[in-house]
Image (cartoon, rainbow over all chains, first blue to last red; front, top):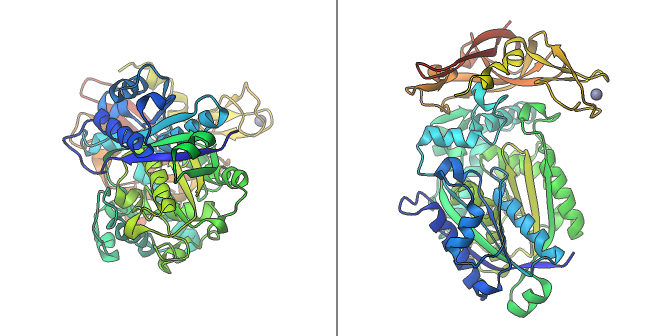
Length: 384
Length: 136
Ligand SMILES: [Zn+2]
């Protein structure tokens, strides 16, 4: 396997972008990444794109062709990847394997979702397709409901409090203030989270990531191309991907996503690193409880210790391990298929020192992107 | 909406029919491949329908419009309780917990199977029935 670097990044703002279409978001992100890399269209050998459900959100499938066509590429191969909310992270991994294998020297990999063309019930319905349709969602449990059941169990087993969950959202909003692409650039308080409308007890509206539109893209290159093309390549040091049962109730331990555990094991092994080497991480905080579970599954804290880790402020920028300096899915926004790519973009900006007031000074970054309630997880480790 | 989608689920939804492997491993819903030993050709196994609540939530935003035509029946009575139940025989399942005030449900509650309406597909469509659970 060849070494692979990210040499270009680009993203649209995330938010309720009513004047933007699915394809315009994808094309803008891709064009920005190509410009950032200083390459041209003819240098690109292959396209990868992650989107969860363009068919149900936008009535459009066959995105592989559409991405290539509308982005102005002439007949290059193009692949659409789907793994629910991990579609972007998995597209990155597949593009990484493609370039590492020697099949192509330069790949553009994007993620996109256009969610706000649907109302709240249809959006909730589409998101629930990430769960087991016959044995979870059609019986009445919603996607927030599944994470709420994890939260209830974590509180029961470890005495984690609703306030500690709220502190995850408060932290990520504080970080997003300094992110020009974030959907919510404003501070919130624990009291505001606690007082927000309940969606699935114990989770409230401000424990949840929002419904968002947005696109994000990267340019990947093999070592030779990267060194000749870029002064600031960010290397993919480790890449891991694993699965778990699609239904939460089939897991021996409902507070651990084995997908995350095994994806992380493989990424750390490949990179020759361990959790203590990581300087910052972008974790999949679709709900506040998900950030706590990720901290434990990735080995950053002991089982049950994630709530107090957040409460002590250790996950803030300036803390011992900054988590979600971008604002995370919670405050940066969560256009589902774009989120895994946007996590990588934040890592690149951080390692380049281009994250402005969000700079953590990290030299090694980790991303964790989850599909559904943990049925898929993708973990990447990046270094300068 | 094609009707077979509903009737092929009747054994599992009405009778809690899962599968049993020659190795003794039980599964609900029925599986094609044994989760323990990976054998195929599993036989039907009917669960007794008694279990314990391991976790639960109170759903306040359903996936179908409570005023709409195609409705998941729980949506008509928000807030409603969904839980993960450990059956006495071992496997777990996700189900609505009925006949209890949401604020009274606790982890560890003993529950039993009841037969209820799950789904209505508009005024002329299919009505789907299946399993829910209530406190013992
Ligand atoms: Zn077996």
